[in-house]
Length: 429
Ligand SMILES: Cc1cc2nc3c(=O)[nH]c(=O)nc-3n(C[C@H](O)[C@H](O)[C@H](O)COP(=O)(O)OP(=O)(O)OC[C@H]3O[C@@H](n4cnc5c(N)ncnc54)[C@H](O)[C@@H]3O)c2cc1C
Image (cartoon, rainbow, N blue to C red):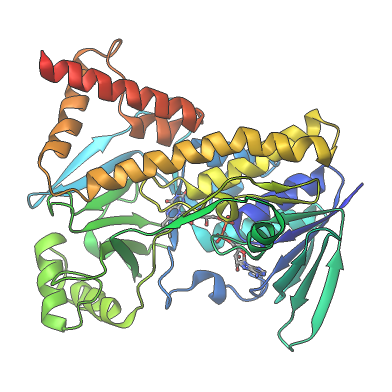
């Protein structure tokens, strides 16, 4: 049995802790926020407008079930999704999605899911250190320094340090200093985002089994996604450029009102006013892609989830991949009899290819969504048309495979590149 320190008790950390505890390790999770079972407010984070609803696809669901969490309990954290609704030209166009592996995606309440993970962590004997911020990492000696809410310092040492402390990972920073030629690349987008939450989705007549997308006809200016979670609220994630007349920088009530009237469907006046109010009050957030050349340091430390490969949500896969990371790591440990020296490099080798593929596809999707060229949407229509007509020879739409299967991202990327070739051939003909 080894002592494993997990830095960051979010979604990846929460699931990794369960997997590792089930393997018989002594697992310590260090989380800067407070215990979600006692105080969920720091996890909901409505004022700083971080994403509240997230879509969990087949890949994420399988990873959660693989850790012994019953499906009925997971289902209570989300609404099953059976289609997508696109608001284009003043109308909603619904596209039904047919599950391939028999698992419907979930529109998940992030904080309910976090609580579920921690509940099962406790059942499996995980020890949590809430309110502890990791401020320093000694990779060679395998210990971390934390600062608690009273500004007291603590040292926690172990046999392995796992980083699940998100896009701005402290452990990754230590790896950047310790590893020779460690390559790290962080990129941002022309767009950032705000999340607006309407407590009563029923008022809008939105269907809870659909994911809603807006701004498809904005020529790449605006992208919006809305999803209902089980508490009956709906969260709108609104992506806009940082600068310009229509942007995150809009400060006048009339400007924002005009924007919502133009791009969001008819909604009750009080809801629209609430959205305008929240838009003006809430700070905006950045969308980040972060790439690291390796995910491990010797046999001492490993990056999982966003700390390894933070990805802007243009495919909605960041959490799903983070959860799958935890499952794959556990499977590799099983294969290698918990030999960290063997497992850590294997994890990097296996997951780096997948993370790069996922990030490339997310970026490519962003280029389509943010392009003002009419050719790209036409390409999508063409692709759908061709697949319908020639289902056996023309590759299917990525969304179906992404949402309903856990096919490796690198395989999907391959399919996508074939699709592009087919598209070009089709056009020449
Ligand atoms: C707007 C938006 C929408 C998204 N939608 C989707 C979606 O639909 N589907 C999807 O799959 N993904 C989505 N994502 C991506 C998803 O949110 C992330 O990929 C996922 O949260 C990564 O989980 P994580 O546990 O690796 O990191 P995080 O969720 O960032 O968790 C990191 C944890 O570490 C803690 N921490 C950080 N620093 C320290 C420290 N120094 N000491 C102690 N603790 C620390 C934090 O408090 C937090 O609990 C979305 C992202 C955004 C921004």
